[in-house]
Length: 297
Image (tube, rainbow, N blue to C red):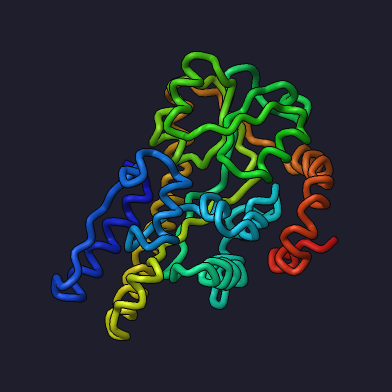
């Protein structure tokens, strides 16, 4: 089971207990409601076809493109320290940004969790420098920024549903993929990959939200119960996610995956290659949204 379940189960427990069972929450994992299609899954939240939702901001970008600024390569340049500052501190600027952008389109944001930083795996060679990415066929989610990121590395980014990734790697249709540790583990990707590189290039917050229709139907007292439940659930999920990081890396190594960690100098060199990506999206997302995350042009 994925660490996402920690948030979902705790949220269910809190809401059901605090409302004395007036609300029952049913959990559908792995995009069961959208036949494996993440984009469709997120559309169902915005159309109020589902009541509550837990998705990464990456999937929300299909409807709220400006959220992609969070996924700019190395915009969070100090690992979890940056993540805590922008998303989990008191009056966190990143959380305020996510909330206002999503709520303009309807759903109500209850709280944020995290899937963690996205790492990269492949079957061809260890990735120790930008040059090592050249020519690699890497599966990425359907998000334009990541296409540009990997094209700038002279790699071959391939968009496909994550549910097809294991088989594509097994059959050699693609060379690698990038995802947070727990997502890689939940899909057993380490069984069909030889190398992993820890590079923290892209952070993945999770959004626990309620559809506009459902939120409007709740009384003020119930709204507070839902918000409190979400905060407790997401805090527990973040803690569990971070504790799992080290455990998962060890698990991968024990299974024979070769793991490399990029040093600061290599990352700095890679970041300079990302200048064109930042320039390309500067106007699209607005300089103000970059500024929220401490990036100035």
